[in-house]
Length: 191
Length: 408
Image 1 (cartoon, chains in turn red, orange):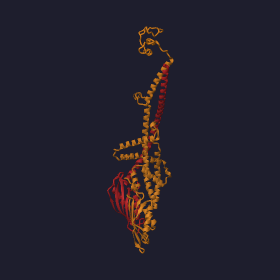
Image 2 (cartoon, rainbow over the protein chains, first blue to last red):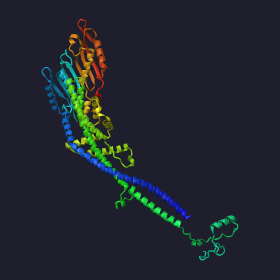
Image 3 (spheres, rainbow over the protein chains, first blue to last red):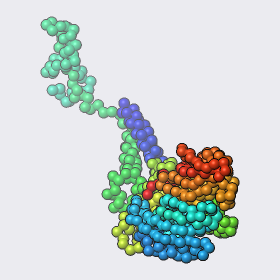
Image 4 (cartoon, rainbow over the protein chains, first blue to last red):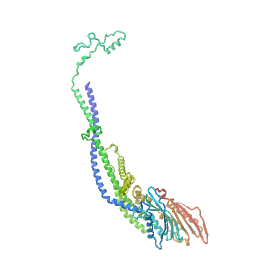
């Protein structure tokens, strides 16, 4: 009677312990291998990090120079204030550059309106009255359309509206006819 | 009580010798057989002397002893197994294991996993900083490429301007190729490290984990830098804000990895540069966004001239007074509404001024740039001798006005 009882208990215990130990031992072995694998990966990651940081540091001067360059150019094309005085000087310089006796470009007035603040940037609206040859009118449009380039250092602008009047009705745009135009321009600046 | 010295062969049951002690079992048998009120048939129930069993000892068995020993060993072994694995997979016995410096494999695994996450996050942050630098360079050169491309493709640019623009585009393209390749190389790297953790078996789970960790690391940096007042700190703050926008940007990653830069034509590179600019954030982003919404009025005027010449072949040749045709006196362009108004007149020797205007309306409506061209009221004056004059007051809209979706 006792023998049978003990035998059953032994078998039962052996089975339970065997199953529990085997399953846990498998997990344990997996975890041990995992730790070893992780340690190896950690060494590799440390090396990579060290190498890549060194590479980044080596390029830091070049990166800083680029950032500085961009910041300086942005200060001209997209200033932090409405900076209307520099814009006025730019317009005068452009007039000087374009205007010749037979190919006029004459800015008769510039009116700056109140800046319009926005979420990402602000707008300085301005109206100009200009008398120009057709060729210079085209150049002026190109200048506005291509403004805001980092290479050219021209203040970022776009045309809001234009009203053209042809002084000499015998001629049309595309020729050297004289055009009087009133142009509404938005000059942009950082918020 | 029965005498303890009673010999073993003495009958155990003696109803008369000892004081009768009723056995419940026998009593019940007897009472059942005889009924409640009748005398028991078998007499009084015999008394059971259990004391006699005290000296009866089981025979000693080697097998039983062995089984007992085995059972004991198994029991102890089970306890040891339970204790060992509990100490390795839980913190229950930490108060002992820590005292004796016994490793806990579960804790070791967790700590090494945490270190891997930390190192990989540092590595990712460094890579994203480099990625941002490459993309900034690409955007910087791309700005010039876009400008030159516009000049090269503009109908109003001179041949010399177009040739210069193409030369400039080729030079800039080489720089863009380098920065594009750099950015691509950064994005091609593995931003995840494998973890021994059942929660992170899928690549997507790992990617999500490392993205979240990187965002947290960047946010921590931003928090640290937010109080800085000097320009360098502000620049760093802006830079980390911009890096944050790159994390998890799969559209940008796909463009960089899947695009074969060498096979890009000028137009493809132009479009891709605009697309990349729209996907990244840097100091030039606002500038790029404004530029993308500008209307090229020189192209608009050129298209009006082109459409007019399809109706009046002498337009732009100053034959109006002698031959007649179409003459414009004023244009009015409004970029906020995309509306264009033209005032002018038509002159013809025959009374077909209205036809000329109608043809002009049709031409403008056929243009890819314009729509809704109309003039509902027609009037003319003149005679066969003097010729005919008709006023022109056309209005039409830009077909694709970028400003109608303008957001500031």
